[in-house]
Amino acid sequence: MTGSRTAGQGQGHEHRSSADTVDAVAVAQAWLVEDPDPDTRAELQQLLADGDTAGLADRFGATLEFGTAGLRGALGAGPNRMNRVVVIRAAAGLATYVKAHGGTSVVIGYDARHKSDVFARDTAQVMAGAGLRAFVLPRPLPTPVLAFAIRHLGTDAGVMVTASHNPPQDNGYKVYLGDGSQIVPPADAEIAAEIAAVGPLAGVPRSDDWETLGEEVLEAYLDRVASLVDPSSPRDLRIAYTPLHGVGRDVVLAAFERAGFPAPAVVARQADPDPEFSTVAFPNPEEPGAIDLAVAAAVEHDSDLVLANDPDADRCAVAVADPEAGSGWRMLRGDEVGALLGAHLVRRYPDLSGTFAASIVSSTLLGKIAAAHGLRYAETLTGFKWISRVEGLRYGYEEALGYCVDPAAVRDKDGVSAALLVAELAATLKADGRVLTDLLDDLAREHGLHATDQLAVRVDDVSLIEQAMARLRTDPPSSLGGRKVELAEDLAAGSDQLPPTDGLRYRLADGGRVVVRPSGTEPKLKAYLEVVVPVVDDDVAAARRTADEALAAIKADLASVLALG
Image (cartoon, rainbow, N blue to C red):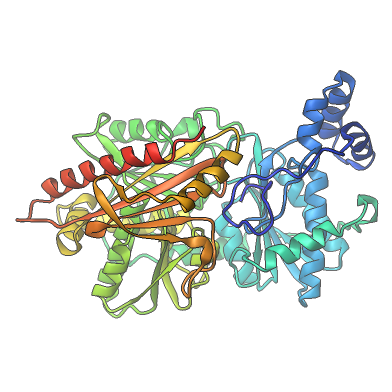
């Protein structure tokens, strides 16, 4: 969740506190007194010297509010930015919460973004000063390593300093509790209340009596990940890989080596951690152009597969050869990879038990795969904080390239273990003269072709999102893309299966559905589309054309319905 959110909105959008009575200059001067960071002090001093009241109001007229994904926002001075003052207060509030619930220890991880190491150190000092045992991972490492460390070490909480795939100017503060899952209500509100109660920074105890961990946790994580693949499965596979300037490279290469796979060909220009993400416009593998260099590497090395992680390596993108694509390669949708991994697990483990799960914005195909193999299936709200809490979870995913293939060890999405299992599946198929898209065609024949798409509307004024959601609640569409809306559900009302969330779901004739919700991390209104088309006479290509036409028609109608302005 982006930091500046209204408490309780969950997946809501930005909200600015009233600043009518705020004397930004006076507040900024008071902030300067306790700010321990020379960079943000210099920023404030310059704003004050320039008389930049607008800049000051932007930083001090709102607050990054702690929510179900902790904090996330742009780096800079003031309570509406990510900085050392905000982080120290957050750590102090979290420490109070942990102690109040009988906790004694916290483990802290961080990525390679600007200030991540500083925020991690501040957090460790505050935790130690509060009398908690604080462990810090030895260097910038992927988020799933931190999620693993919580359960492996048996700590009562975990903090990961990361903004995941946000732009380079951002950073974030993700909080987990002792079960290894991200926080959900009411813990978020309780922690936020403790943060709000923190007084002046001078009164926050800090200590250097914290411990930097050695390699043992990472080694245990790598052993666990490598154990997920069948030692007798094929290993003949050529992979092009990019960590997108993040922290995934060394861990991914070590995992593949430990599992006996050939080393992937790493995109040299994106191999090293780079907080500026210098070769991409946006460090998210879903964004257009983000994996272009990886595709070029795949062509150069005659690769069978392209794999990409986002900067903190909790997501995994997959691209496959496709003669019809302009580059000769296309990136699989998260829903396609989610279905492939589910199919791989049920075929590899005939006696598999437990529950498969996916979020409400993900394809319904996984539910059909689960039912066909006698497995339970659960649908959750968006976010792994919900998926990870499904009782008896064996596998879960959501369409935004997040996959949890080993919930017993990592109760969160994990782009490293997912990459390894995708590689195992691709190598197994290759040994039979097949590719990933052949398995997708098999699934379409068995369950119908499930095709998905998205529409996102970005805004500068987030109040437009509130207005659009209110309008849709008052006047829902009767049809979309020529398909009757058979049921309009307001997800804010909640149900026996789902807690309340700010979203709308439309059930369409012929098995389609649309979910509309504000983005949880960006100023966007997002719509998630799915249609299901039967495959007739074994002609998957014809079903795909029909599905593409149906999605295009629904998308065109939605673009009109969701027009903001």
